[in-house]
Length: 273
Length: 273
Image (cartoon, rainbow over all chains, first blue to last red; front, side):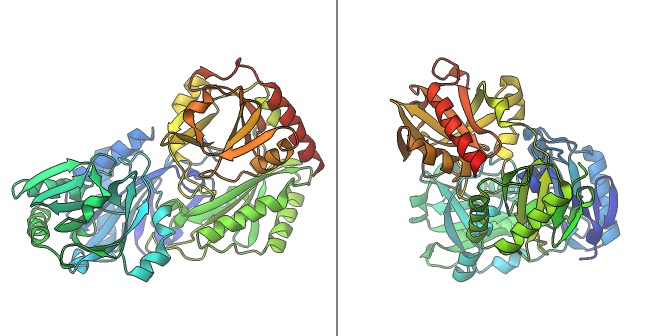
């Protein structure tokens, strides 16, 4: 990748962007991030993502070194420089360089502008999930702790699954990089609380409310069994039908009708925002 | 700090040791480490620590780039170069530089030789703990995810506590950087499973077995209430008495007799190994 990135107050070539090894994100996982898409210079739901990023920082007592206005400006400049057209934008804020490798200091902050590795349409035929007993700590905060899923790469490859669905104490929460929704008795159900407040999740809920009954509540693992349809939502995947979880077929093993209707309503909103 | 460190196959000045920002330890918390002490060139329980480090790597499908013999040699050279006398040695292995910032590649590996920030004796008068509902994922593996405790720094400062004690579903497991032991009815009790197999824990158990009854088992949070004594064990702290947990006094609020006896037996072993 030859793009320009922004690191600690200046633009640099991505290939030359380094941090000292005393960084607390590296040494102690003290770090938050966010990720959103550029569509030909436009950033759908831009303020939602920035709201979440600043809120994550607050919850960890970290200070984003740029105010919202300046951050938007820097992102704009970065997109101008890279001209990727369709791209991903990743903000990452760490606990900073730490003398004792434990105590936070002045945060390190970067903005990365990345090629997009897949299109929402790639998941149109439905995806498979596998299960993991895990609950993210402070789930409202988008931390960098993805180890529980990455360690399952061999199983993901073997099963052809794309995401890991977390459950704990009998409740499901979310997948590694997406929120989950069930259709049961023609109602739309999604776990709450204990999940990341996904921006796609938020807007799917808003468009779905005009289409069918919506419930945000605790969802038991067993409820997957008698769901008509299941789908996941995320920034990259938009609305992706789920056709199999841990080897068990959902519905008739094909993307469902409600999923398609909701997906179309979301795409309409995404493209006009 | 002006010490030399070892990073990816060569010795460097610590101040100049950097990683590219695509490192998976930084981006996704995919990283393990270990930490042990040098006492004037001698490394107590050296092989125990290396056993654990290689086992952590195996469990995450990561390959330590040096075999044990070469690793010991590099550590020896590093201590020779730095001549700190009493020091800490930290091994850190990450998922490597990742093109998609998600998939592991060739690991990055470093050996840091650090000054010691406190002495075991610093904790002789007893420490305070605070509680947190949290269970480490794959607790046998020494991952870098310390965010749950670091976010509690304000509360630690305010209460004067030095460590956070994790409990979940009614069971206690371990503190941020130590294992925990209770004395009840003149038996020594320590949580198992669901904890890091601390090297100090292991040797405390071995010396304690000659002194009193020992139980490794699930330990309920309520059991703290009627414990005669509580102590924690760790590489830096050795055996540290606990005199208060979440504002509640343990025993008479002073280090207990069993704790002293066990601590002395451990120090004897530590100094001769």
